[in-house]
Amino acid sequence: MVESSALVVFSGGQDSTTCLYWALKNFSKVIAISFDYGQKHKIELESAKKITKLANVEHEILEFDLFSKLGGNSLTDDIDIEDAKDKKGLPNSFVPGRNILFLSYVACIAYSKKIKNIVTGVCETDFSGYPDCRDDTIKSLQVTLNLAMETKFVIHTPLMWLSKAKSIDLALEVGAMDALAYSHTCYNGVYPPCMKCPACILREKGFKEANQVDPIFSRN
Amino acid sequence: MVESSALVVFSGGQDSTTCLYWALKNFSKVIAISFDYGQKHKIELESAKKITKLANVEHEILEFDLFSKLGGNSLTDDIDIEDAKDKKGLPNSFVPGRNILFLSYVACIAYSKKIKNIVTGVCETDFSGYPDCRDDTIKSLQVTLNLAMETKFVIHTPLMWLSKAKSIDLALEVGAMDALAYSHTCYNGVYPPCMKCPACILREKGFKEANQVDPIFSRN
Image (tube, rainbow over all chains, first blue to last red; front, side, top):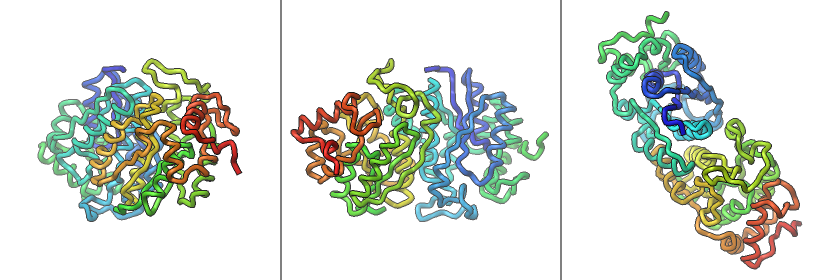
């Protein structure tokens, strides 16, 4: 088990970009793992590629088409993305169990590479109704994975208790601002971002509260 | 959530066949889920098809080729199957995290079908060194999945504390003996079974201790 190595679950979005740079500050070896899970917008993976290149980080993109087979959600299906909630109050972008499967798969890779640390950008503060992003879920998963593989992974969640504004402070601190110019957020998968979807609105609010200009509008 | 429905993780082996018939006794609707995970021996899936047909049970086979990508184990790679243990005492047929991924994926399907019960044939008694078959692991996973999906799955493990002989008693009790004729066990993927590999030896020992003749030798 290599104590100083980490795998980062890396979507190419704002949060995982901040986490990638946080990991680079905290571990001597970092590998970014992205999933191609049949998402409608390939712009996410393009962002992920650009950012890992900029950060000079090893990057693996894994196909994971289980969710497109399950269907019934707005991230992989041709359903309008809205902030509409279902009966449980979950937005229709909720892919049940997604984070559990992603993190479990990343743990399998970590095991095979003898890497101890796993980093994910989940956050309970700006909680969008995703129960698999909660602190309880992630801690329970760590226990499950360690029991299942008889190992001692640590799942790090540097953004868990940060507001969007505070996560921008962290991005500044770890030197992630240049990379955030290429991080993708917009649910509608367009560049420049639509600034109307819930994800764009949340991002804009965060930068405003942190008194920072979003570098996405001043890409090189 | 349909209280009386169950998904059975179904490999076509002896244990999951017993579990399938146990589920048929305990739930009014049962669906069997098999995984095509790049296993060397397709005979497993052929067994699964025969048995679900015999049991008249809905059967879904899901492709799950993540493990063949990870590699390094004797179930999917061209490595001799031995009972050899690695440094942790795990046999080289151990695919780290396999059960967690299978069960998590089955839980995603259960969620989408509004099914409450998940049945798996894992067993701690004839514990082959697989930590992901332990009772602690499965109970921890149930908690993780329920936190992650904000639901109330129950993972049933009818064989958890049974010896191989006792699981044959259970097979008799739930009417699974005819189906066991078609259940695949042999690690070498041959029929008739090799009777030399650890799996064949364990199966033979169980039938002997239960004073039963293995129906695999008297297929129709």
